[in-house]
Length: 133
Image 1 (cartoon, rainbow, N blue to C red):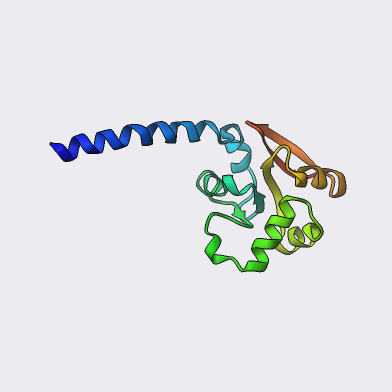
Image 2 (image 1 turned 60 degrees about the vertical axis):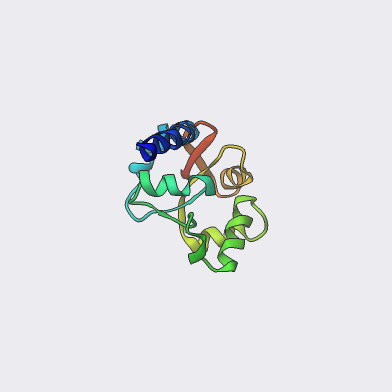
């Protein structure tokens, strides 16, 4: 009985946390993501990579929550790309990214739009989905 009560007491705060987290992901982008062809490489905001892998398993994130599988150079390239720092174009070319799931105010959003002529195809909860025109 004590174990059951303890489990319930622990589960209530966890359920509240999980419920809050679900409201912070761009659920309206699920269908547009699922329509992207299988095997397409996507650069995504690090906070969404796990969600992306679950919601659109046909896509291939160029970086995800399994940070231990990436080289230090790949991690540095990813961080530089999100900030549109020098080398971001080489990183996206090397990873063959053909879609982007990013925070709307991320520097890479402007860079992709202005320099590579990508367009926002969908937006939700402060995130945008971009693809080449």
